[in-house]
Image (cartoon, rainbow, N blue to C red):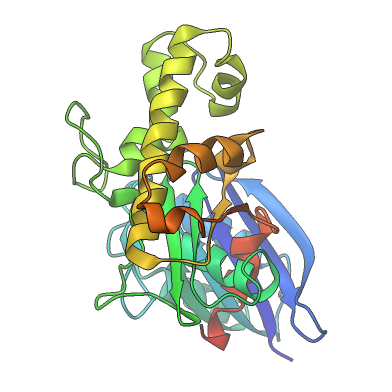
Length: 304
């Protein structure tokens, strides 16, 4: 039997697990989360991902390993094009490298990369908040900002495999330094946890989004940072709705776990929506949390 392994590479943590698809609903077996190497460089990350995968496979096994990565991947889903919060990963043929290293250990592995938000969208679709939906968006809020978009029951990947990079929508005013993707005025720079934390440190505040969220009622600087992030996210959500007309936008990622985040964004996004869309606008929390991308990654060979 082919083992199905899902791995979600994040800026702060890497999560993985074997997914059992034999029952009525997929089941995540023995999930594990480790810290992402602080260097965020190709060799360290590759080794960490391989060591994680080896927790569920051993010599003689045949497996599929799906890996969700936070950035742009090639159309054939074998190479990294750009990971905006990592360094030196451009062009790395991660899939082939991992398959080679597994083969050296006596393991037959098919490896496929996918944008992590797309993986989260697949996970939510098969057993989470997007069950039964054909048109939906999963917005991942964390170190960066991503989105997995589905229309007519299929992921939207685009002509070059780069669709759904909503964190790089140019929605923001001047005054930003420039996103690590090479563009400017992007939603990710205005609202992601990494960027909010950088600005916090410059103002002498704690560089931790969760702490800043808790401080916002008592500290004017913290409140200003959080308010600006929420407003940018609300504009992004409204823009996704205007482009896709989804049944729902589903929030995923570490930032989305902040208490009251969904309610804050729901109210703010509504005012930016065209009036006919307001009555049907649905903003939902993830049902799977950090498991969504892992489960979706393991299901990538099934197609969506």
